[in-house]
Length: 114
Image 1: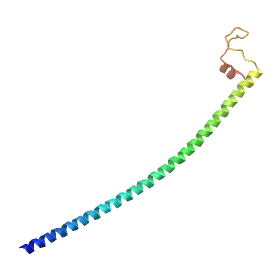
Image 2 (image 1 turned 30 degrees about the horizontal axis):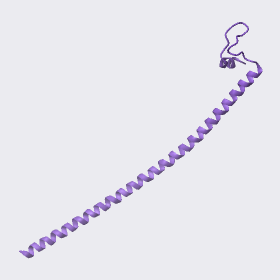
Image 3 (image 1 turned 180 degrees about the vertical axis):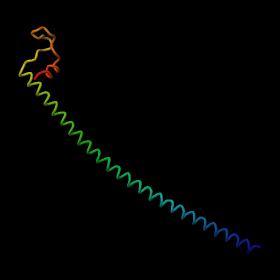
Image 4 (image 1 turned 180 degrees about the horizontal axis):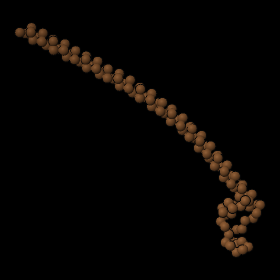
C-alpha cells in the first residue's frame, strides 16, 4: 500500500513537473510572439515617423517659399504705391477733388489708377 502511494506521489510530481514545463514553454512562446509583434509595430511606427518628418520638412519648405512670395508681393505692392504717389499726387482724405466729390479711399485710388 505504501509503495503504491509512493508510486502515485511520484507520478503526481512527474505530472506537475510536466505541466509546469508545458506552462513555461507556452509562456516563453507567448513572450516570443509578443516581442515579435512589438518589433513589427516598432518598425511600422519608425516608418510612419520617417514619413511624418519628410512631410514636416516639405511643409516647412513650402511655408518658407510662401512667406518669401508674400514678402515679395508686399514689397511690389508698396513699391507700386510709392511709384503711383510720386507720379500723381493723390488727394489726401481731408481734401476734396476739384468737382467737390468726396475723395476715394486710397486703395480705390490705386486700383482705379491706370
